Image (cartoon, rainbow, N blue to C red; front, side):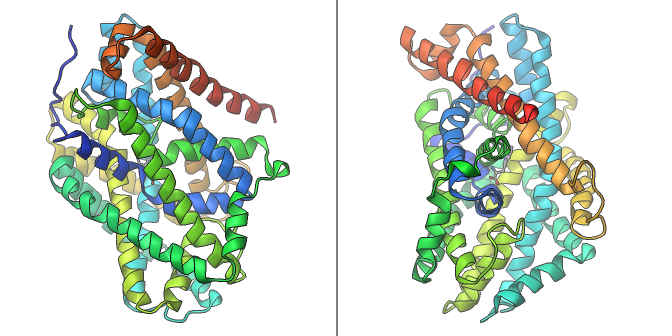
Length: 453
Ligand code: TRP
């Protein structure tokens, strides 16, 4: 059977729109909220360097593998894996990659929406001028007060989930493409503005030093595991989101350069966010290791000092919310596409059911910050920590490893050559080396060393 050239869910109107959508998926809370706070918790420079290495040697090949498999299968990840395993006489169990991805997607979506709700809340706080000339104590207290109030958090979680469901029910292609075209550049501009502000504080050098000074003593196997998890998370890898998007990619687009561009953009945004946040942390005597609240305390402080800060601050959190919604959409796409294919269901209905399930799971995350703060699932992990840890540090890397193994060894070399657009023995060798050996081996080594320690 020949590979099909169209997907039933629709197609991106050009390679650039795939780039925008994939970049929209990649750039999100992972870059602006998560990257700085886990960098802070893991000691800074050593973490950043290992993270960059994970993006380059593990993330890039796996992203190419996802796009390639998606475009070859042209369906939801579950059905793509099922079809490809059948077509090329492989073990039918490869379909489990798709199922694990759907499960990981629910877990991630459930807490992603809660945090995105925080960003929405900050839109309203900023617009009210709550942080005008605020002291570090006021900024911290505002955040703590918000976190202590589950009803408030559920309200914003619900709003964000409703917006996500609304957009995914319409189909990704119409509304989203248009929006992303505008707000991605705008988000970049505002990050530059914050970067400029951070530069004027006397702590810029200290912040940059914190992010880039490499210190071997800071490196443990746990640091490496978390850096790798972050590389997967920020590039949206390991659960089939990019595979699902790849299914809608026109056959003519080059996979290599496209993926390179997306990963580069994503990395730039994360590094810019870190460079904007850490100088403000040090200038105000805050702790880099304060955890998930980091961005919500530091950035309002910066905006509070700036001329027109309320305006820029409001705009900034609007853009963060947008960045989060284009990511939330991609997290939902594998499950959504599968249910539509399997039951011939309407996208709208499926979107609502999916949203309700993830919303209910998300309540656990909300409560982890207040009522259940002392309830520990394993060790010292709260419900949120646990869901976050298992999905990001276990399921995504495991899924990514299997995806790259299948893309390297499960497909005939003619298909690989056709997808990559170059039929040469060398391409095949390099592909097998990168996707079939280096990337999966990298993941495996990190796993094993973590288990051993
Ligand atoms: N990459 C997004 C971010 O950085 C989050 C995200 C979107 C994601 N799709 C994903 C994470 C798929 C894991 C898997 O915010």
